Every structure is written in C-alpha cells, then in structure tokens.
Length: 163
Image (cartoon, rainbow, N blue to C red):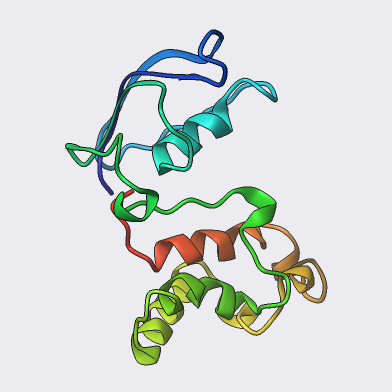
C-alpha cells in the first residue's frame, strides 16, 4: 500500500460554509486508520475527495508522494467500496470480485488466478458461486464473519492498487 497525505484539505458546497474544515493527515505506507463520527460529519465526503469523486475546495491530496488533487479518479491508483453499493446482486461472488479487472480488459486466465488467490486468502473458496443475498443463508460459515464484506474486500484486493 502507498502512503496518503492530506494537506489542509477543505470542502465547501456553497463557497461559504466549510463542511470539511482544514484537515491535515499523514498516513504512512502500511498504516491502517479508522474514521469514526456521527452521520453527516463528512467521513464519506472526505473519502470521496481522496478517491477523486468530489473536488477539493482547497488543500492538496498526495498518494504515494504524488500530488493527485487534480487527477481523475481512474488515474489515482486507488480502489474504494461503499457498503451496500459494492456488490451487484445479480452477479455471483466470483463475478463481483472479477468485475473491475474484466472491464479493464485483463485476460480471463489472469482474472481467474487473482480471484482464486483472493478467495483463498479471504476464505471465500466455497462461496464463489453464490449471489450476495445467499451469503447469509445455508451454512454457518457464510452467515457471520463479514460474509458480505469479504467479497467487497476481495474485489479491491485483486486490483492491486496503490491505496
């Protein structure tokens, strides 16, 4: 993973009220952080700015020591999922995990190899043919332990992005 640096990043929707006040943050390569706060405090907006889905009002975003503030989302080398929107209900776990690589034109063999590797690491081997709604049915192993979170993580893991 790459490091992430935010330098005095702000967000204002109307040009007057700052919904994200100047935030400076340095997350080292390999470091893990958790953002917590009440609904509406700006957690998702901040993540969307890092991903390039929202414009930064002021300040700079750096990923892997590269300024990405003005870069398009597709050029930032990151992957992000947002809870309920991460899995397509009509696709199997395997298809969901492979989707990002498929639309990038990666070979079928390479996609299959990465999906199998991620499935092994995330203990999803026996769940690849199921649809997301089926992850809470059938076996006890599929019910708990983040049964729907693991395919989401797998779809990010197999992309091998910087962040």
